[in-house]
Image (spheres, rainbow, N blue to C red):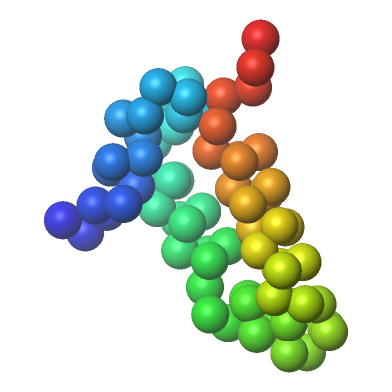
Length: 68
């Protein structure tokens, strides 16, 4: 179950077509990493709410199918 979250995610109906499990896992791991959070919130002065909104929008744009 190395990629359990990503495997569950790519089975969802609104996921970007053809998105490989490995890429979904990489996006989740990278964008939700504690290091990136600390860079934005602690070092760059973002509020936790701003980071959360950015993370949600970024993950949605990278993982979800574009409405047609």
